[in-house]
Image: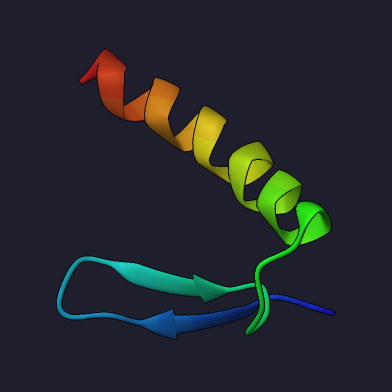
Length: 43
């Protein structure tokens, strides 16, 4: 499933990978979150 990117307020995004909990979706979420977290830590 292709992720859906939706606006969430003035300065955030909601990225939906699906509507269930499974290993594939979990891995995709962590793959996206790790670089974003590292970038936020640099500020």
